[in-house]
Amino acid sequence: MFGMFWMNFPYMFNRNTMLDMNRNTVLAIAGVCGTAFIGYCIYFDRKRRSAPDFKQKLKESMIAFYEKYLDKKAEEQQENVFISWHDLL
Image (cartoon, rainbow, N blue to C red):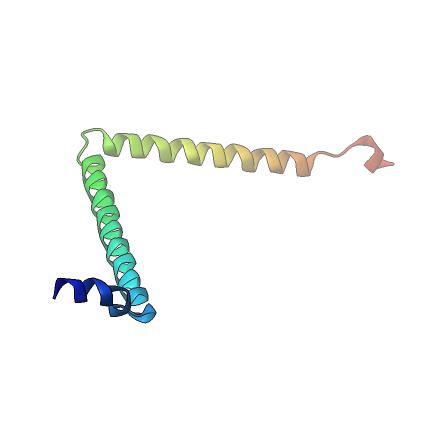
């Protein structure tokens, strides 16, 4: 009986069955990795938000970004207002 198993083993699985098994395995691994990634994101987001100085750092970064934006806008306006003496002739 055991000998019959080994003799028929290569013919037990056809190509389509093997591809379906591989596809299912890949989908399962992708699902596990996706779930782990989402869990990782949630964990570190909660950890970050529960930090005592989170709101202060967020406020400082927003202020720095806005100041940089305003400086860039003022610089662009200065460049637009600049008139060379060639333009006056």
